[in-house]
Amino acid sequence: MPPTIRRARLGTKAQVVLPKEAREALGLTPGDTFAFAIEGDDVRVIRAPAEGSDPFACFTEWASEADRAGYADL
Image 1 (cartoon, rainbow, N blue to C red):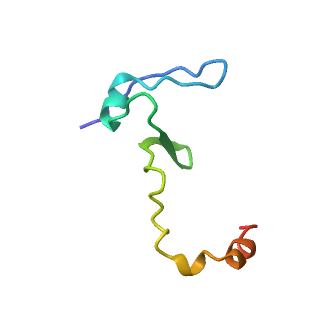
Image 2: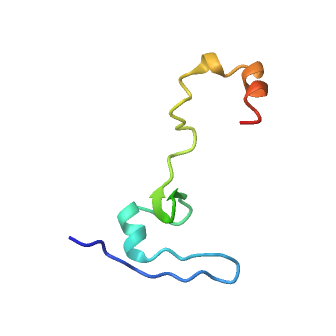
Image 3: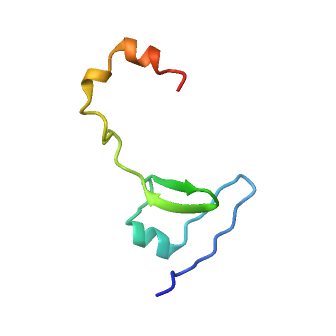
C-alpha cells in the first residue's frame, strides 16, 4: 500500500502547519512536541519522546562532572 501524502507549506517565518491526518496519526494535540528524523534526504516527522525519558539516564556511572567536561566537545 503506498503511503498517504499530504502537502504543507513553509511560511515566511519557517513555520509549518502539520496536516490534520499527520497530527491524528501521531496523536498530537496543541502544545505537544514532535521531532524530525533525518536520514540523507529522507525526513520523517515523529512524536518526540516525553521530557525526562532519556534512554541513557540509567547509566549514572557516566554522569559525573568529569565525564561532562571530558565529553563536552563531542
